[in-house]
Length: 263
Image 1 (cartoon, rainbow, N blue to C red):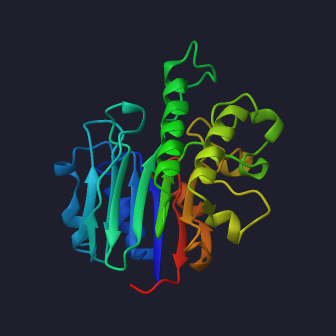
Image 2 (tube, rainbow, N blue to C red):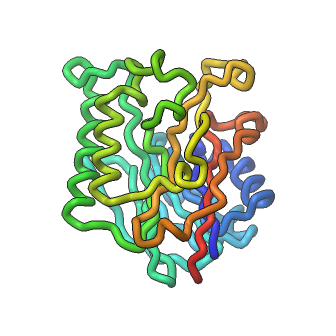
């Protein structure tokens, strides 16, 4: 069995102490980070090595994007995809010795206006999700787990107010359709919602809301999916809401799940 966590850290160097705190308190076997905002050679890997996370596979760039997979279990680099041909460090994959491949994905946020004719970033987001869909159709995932900040809250209970959010980037019908199509193309199972099928679940609260806990205007933007052949092994899903209250936190919190698969 192994446990995997995904977390948009919003600068791995600025929040290295929060990462080490999470690793010390929760000890997931694998931690996938997004928005590292660091070249790979500047990631403070020694801090993580000292806690037993001796294997790290990452893609980075200065000041933006960036994804990393760190593990207590041996992993090998399984490549990356430049979906939508943006030239961004938004995907990296790694394979465990048991043959399970982990995809760590950071989907573009999409800007503020949900209209690609006036907002290039929104168009890039839709194109990214479309390319993901096409890739999964062409090569159906098997023994795979996909995690990350997918920047879409697809279900009504994944946002604080479905009605209020229908015209807000991350919950618009067009984004939900694009993400749902990508999920269906790969026959991916949303492990978190498999385990917790009803009720509001959030993994992100805006920095613009200092009373984030009281107002609770959150969104579930961070996901753990599994290919259908291993989805049944996924369980114990949880979202670490208290992490949003740590000192100088990310606006996202970690999402975890365990898999009863021998390693």
